[in-house]
Each structure stands twice: as structure tokens, then as C-alpha cells.
Length: 259
Ligand code: NAP
Image (cartoon, rainbow, N blue to C red):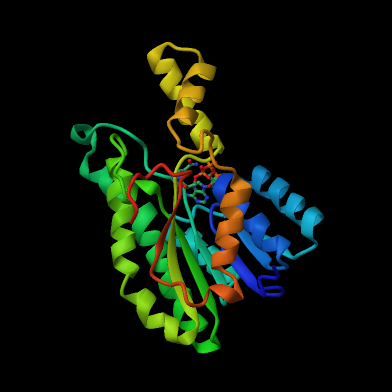
């Protein structure tokens, strides 16, 4: 299927690796020029070259911390009028509720709630004026089914979800949609690191812990960044203008409920 977005421009935040990279590559394969960001320059440039070689689209890199005001300004300066915005950043650290101090909560809210809200506010009205916009917030399956030890993430991401729910209905008459995508376990560096941490803590072989985590998913495997990117690309497509304000699980069946 031709997604009808060739020649459009996307900002993909936090995209040198993992889910963000999967989105950038999938959009680029549809002929979308991408502006990608990350804090580390080296991996970002490697990814940019990989996308250019695979697709031939224009790839702009912005080395920045997207959770800071200066980082967001740099990103918007490189691309003030995107057609597509993919909000993403690293997730807050795990821990025990009793150990999270106010500073930790502020950081989580800044990174996973205020940052995407600020970027949306900066670009959404231009999208409405131009009559095309697709905004996808990468959140987590934890907003449907909160994960123990990830309270910082559960809270900040649910806050973002609530914050844009009304806006997503106001923009859709101008062909601008805002949706959340809720990943379960995907095979990325982040997941590999958390699995390693669990194995070390339990003093068990990494392969055993990894196999157990996979078996806990009804699909019996982790998701791939390619299938994540393909889903996001569809949400950004010309065909998806009637999907807005939705929060779409992509979790191999992990969430047990029908709704
Ligand atoms: P990942 O493989 O560790 O990749 C993270 C990417 O984001 C890297 O390119 C990293 O580059 C960049 N990044 C991180 N913090 C950034 C910041 N402040 N500013 C700019 N770039 C930043 O992680 P992932 O698995 O793709 O996860 C992406 C998001 O999805 C996270 O919020 C994670 O919590 C969430 N999530 C992931 C899963 C999963 O199973 N993978 C499940 C649910 C939710 P630099 O480090 O160089 O900045």
C-alpha cells in the first residue's frame, strides 16, 4: 500500500536507536524526509547514514537532549513546520515508590509529559493551517496496565495521554491527528539492558531470564522495531486521517482485556 506521504517531513525524537529509529526508517521508506535527534552524536550519524543509504531521503540530524528547552528549540529550528511529529524520549528509571523524591517526579514529568506537550503546541497550529498533520506519542503499554517499579513512567505517560485527549478531537477537522502508541516489550537496547539487570539481580543466566520474558508474551517473542515503525508509519499516512485520540497497544497480546 502506498501510504501517500512521499515528500512530507517528519520530526522523529530520540531516533538513533530502538523504537524511534524504527519509526524514522519506516517513514523514510515511504519517502518522508526525516529530522532525527538523540543526545549521542556518533550513533545518530550512523543511523542517519543507514537511513539515507536505504531510502535516499533527506535526513537531518540534531544532537540534543529533547527533554530540555534548548534541545526542543534546536529541533524546531531545524524543522519549524513538520507534517509529522513522533514524540519519544528515554523512559524514567525504575525503582520503589518510597524512593522517588520530588526531583525524580519532576524529571519524569518534564521528560515524558511536558516535552511532548511543548513540541505538540509548537507544531500543531501550523499543521492545522496547512491541512495536514500526524502526531504520534510513543508512550507505553503501562498506561493501560501499570507496571510495578515503573511508577514514574506510568504517571507521566498517563498525564500526557489525558492532556492531549481533547486537543486530538479539536484538530481532526483540519486533518491533523494525535494518537498514542503503547509498546509492550520490544527488542531494543533498553529492553536488553533491563533483562540483563534482572538476570544479574537474580543471579541467573541471561538466556533463561530472556526466554522467560518472551514466554510471558502471548506472541512468545518480543516485538521488532520494524513492526513498530510500520504501525507508526500507517498512523502517519494519508489513509489514517479518521483515527485520532486513540491509544493503540502493540504488545503481542500482553494486555488481556478486549478493550
Ligand atoms: P533505546 O533502545 O534505549 O533507544 C532510545 C533512543 O532515544 C536512543 O536513540 C537515545 O539516544 C534516544 N534518547 C534517549 N533519551 C533522549 C533524550 N533525552 N533526548 C534525545 N534523545 C534521547 O529505547 P527504546 O526501547 O527505543 O525506548 C524508547 C521509549 O519507549 C522509552 O521511553 C521507553 O521507556 C519506551 N518503551 C520502550 C519499550 C520497549 O520494550 N523497548 C516498551 C515500552 C515503552 P541517546 O541516548 O544518544 O540520546
